[in-house]
Length: 210
Image 1 (cartoon, rainbow, N blue to C red):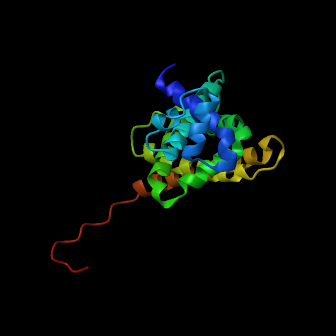
Image 2: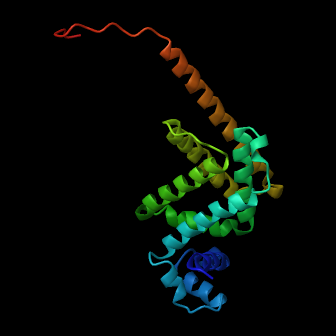
Image 3: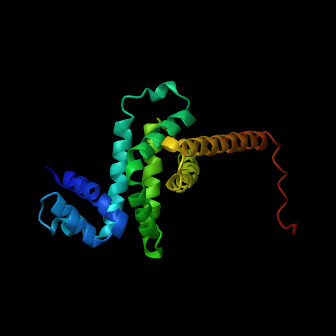
């Protein structure tokens, strides 16, 4: 069992405890005991404390999302459908642990954890785009991830309070947000193409005030 595997097992074992106590050093000790590990392993595995455990949980979510969709033929789908498939797989995976996810987000929402929260979101949307087959290397690499970060964050917040059967409302919400993002992207591309076709304004002679 390598160190990453120990970290994976610890954060998963901590999930039921986080529901009641939040993400604290105490639940990492309890997770280690549940796994019959040395109680100090929780602290040693996450030297930066519970925030590091939450960050690892998010990274585990990225890896499991890709694994869960490994058998799906994403290339047969349009890009929005690929992203929908990936995000839905992620939501299904963590549906039994929704309250623990809520407590994790509460910890990340603290002012001192803003940088970690941003890093987690960026890594997740990058994992989503890479799994969806994105190979961009220009400015769109950033714009796609920024757009998806907004969609993904809004969907997670909606999903946390979704009481519909099998998360149907969350899936519909996600589909609408992805469609909105697609329309904005198309409008931006059309506008860029239209602006590129306009004649350049004449250069003013030097020395003018206007």
